[in-house]
Length: 259
Image 1 (tube, rainbow, N blue to C red):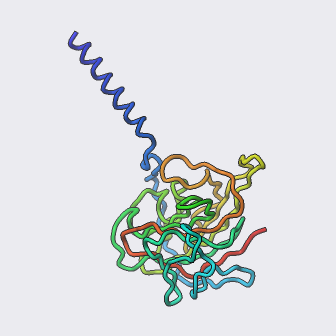
Image 2: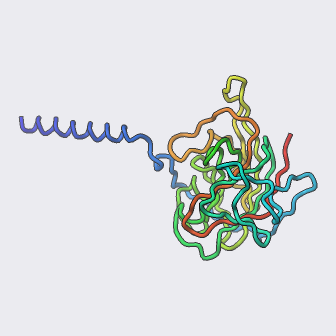
Image 3: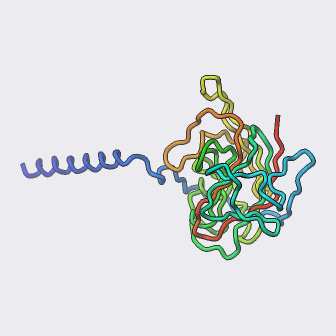
């Protein structure tokens, strides 16, 4: 009887623990992938790439005329100095005034030299390939310091955040300029809002192919599974992550629309 009672009690505790876990819902850790780690590929030296003749220049080193604050759609409040755009922590995300469908995008970014912290708390920002609402709504290409900095592989630099790890870690050291070259094919939705064709993206990080014609599973989510919601042409967004480490800088941002 004692053994039976103990067994019943253990089953009751196990059931209570399972119920508590279920009630708590999904956790951020559920969608973190740590293995296998992408191979390290040393890129060539950094060079700035000027915009071609048919490009829309989104940042030319002079002003933020092409950008607005996501919070209130007023002027973007990040800092421009010496030809460089830098996140001004606490002012929120910024996005382009214009909306885009499919495109080719070039962007250069820099992690500050001497940055501290580790994991996701080390130079965290993001390039949202299509911004579909306020906050962090949209499809995120991760920006952070992945130079000798371990984190989950689908959250390191050049990952499609919480979806696809990069094919290689092509990160340069902090203080050096990085580049992203992106080919973005926007998703297509039917009249009833259902998905006809997913978003597809190809990304080069410092000239190294890191995302090869990848079909996205939906919009970025920190917790839970990604999913689509219907939208049309969208702005491109840069993230003020509120990272306690030094802020990220950008230069030479341009885009070519693909009809």
